Image (tube, rainbow, N blue to C red; front, side):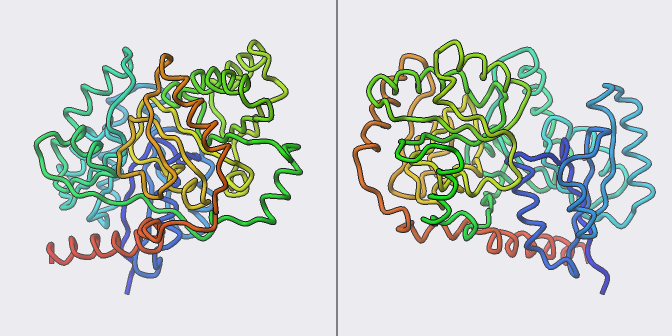
Length: 368
């Protein structure tokens, strides 16, 4: 039997939380039954595209994010749907453009048009306001509503119904491993230090400036502390300069974008996520799978607090002392990182992929 082909719509298949989630699903699917293809919004190739093609996936590039040409974009969408009538399900993850790509899908006769919400809000800015306006229009042509958290669903769909879908990771890959911890800490030169860690793109919403200012305060009470930052992005150089300005250049480690982040969680003693907004970040699940005590922004869904050693705090300047106090408290505890909650396995990619495959098949059975 020929595999069902699902068209996933994204910005670009680069390293990131939403993209990692989709790839985790894809790797766990029985690809003889279900195949993923991708519609992106950049002309450039993404970092996951070699792997996608090796697994049998197809990638289609539009250029609207590069050139802003909506007329050309609609022509590209119409041509894609006309030339590929095999797509009976379009699974959209890019809310800000769904009005167009799901609208054209409906006009082309695609029966199942999924809109999947991954964020509960946008940063308040001119660009953020524009995205908020587009978000209001996004559900218009969707007939299946999914969300990574109740907050993300309420933001995207308002009074419309939606279904919560867990974000999935390969839990086994992130479980605590003492040998890996010793090796990576030696490699990083942080043996004997209390390592505060963060994994995330250097974008405004990740709030790295707050993170560095908070870490600067922590150093006053915990001189052995080091800060490990994993990720890349256009603000990275600015944050590196801020570390110099704060006199922290010897204490903050920038390891850049990493294809495999799992060893770096092993090196950490605490994980912090002070984002200005988040949906249901994979990094939070990864950190808890590694047995780390976690401090999360209060902008994430409370359902992210899966294991006992987790806490939410406001990501605001006047709350820096609360983050510092919490880290000092963690530093004074002995934590068995191998003892994680059984509930973390609900977020294992195998489980999540099976449920998503069942959803796809159920939709096509309805059509039949």
